[in-house]
Amino acid sequence: MHQGRTTLSKFLIQQLKGSPEQSDLAALLVDIAAAVKAISAMTAKGELGGVLGSLDSTNIQGETQKKLDVMSDTAFINTFSMGGLVAGLASEENDDILEIDPRDGTGRFLAVFDPLDGSSNIDVNVSVGSIFSVLIAPQGRTPTVDDFLVPGRQQLAAGYAIYGPSTMFVLTVGKGTHGFTLDREVGNFILTHPHMEVPADTSEFAINASNERFWEPPVQRYVSECKNGKTDVRGRDFNMRWIASMVADIHRILMRGGVFMYPRDTKDPSKAGRLRLMYEANPMSMVIEQAGGLGSTGRERILDLQPNDIHQRVPVVIGSRNEVERIEKYHREYDTGTDEKYSSPLFQERSLYAN
Image 1: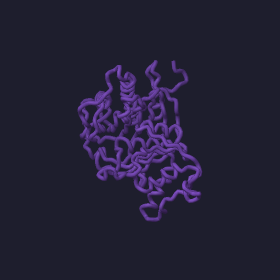
Image 2 (image 1 turned 60 degrees about the vertical axis):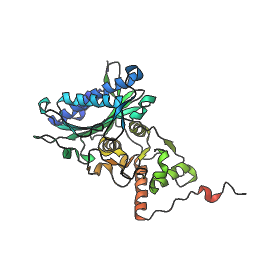
Image 3 (image 1 turned 90 degrees about the horizontal axis):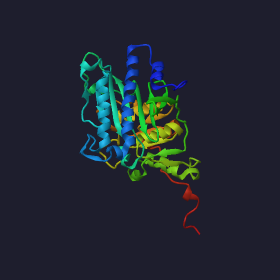
Image 4 (image 1 turned 30 degrees about the vertical axis):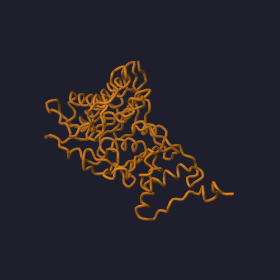
């Protein structure tokens, strides 16, 4: 049936062996893949399944919940509750952590997840996804919020699913980043993209340009140079992409390079950033860094941040290493007052109104 092809289960058995904890982690990732299959089936039905549209409720982020937000959240919670491998959950859709009844199993792990990223795109049939992270659980006691608040470098595994023309499941257990495609005929995830790598250099960037007037000067400087292309200091033209679904944007970058930016801005000064550290920035940074890229706030490595709240927001700059490092350099120069005020050479040589 799949002779010579590696299924997700077979891959995880090969990657995670040698201890009961490793075996349980493999089993948990298979459980996560099962939830992904259920969500994939729901998203594929669209209006035919009655899953589109919004509810009258909002989540902890103050965002109006889509029907599929809640259904996807339920799919993950049910999977973790029945699997017996998770002691506690943190979901972007819920105010507080959820404890799992210890009678259901040993509960070696904590699961952190965004059940449906980019859900504003559901009704217009644009790719959406799910993001997850796995942490170690305390043994011999019920987990508390503090057990979740550890730097991203302590993640045991992280990944995402993207629901597009095909459903892909991308993950890392700290041994590179690998992609699996769902074979709908047999219901298995098949390894199709082993050892994924993000090119160090790129000519693409992803950012919501409508917020340009609110960006900090280092980000304005970087984006201006990219837009000016070969007429400016970069010496080559860049393309700008923006899907408004982090999973879709990061997946494109993982496949062909680029840099994704949701930087700090002054649109809402009360927020240090827009994206959630625990549910989005940490897992995506682990995925990208295991593929050779880099995840940063613009000023420090995301995976080194000490979380102070399960719903903490941070600025995010993720993607091709050389571009992320350039953006970090611009922030350092700005913070130390050593940057030069940006001036495009395009109008130093000629004017639109010159005779």
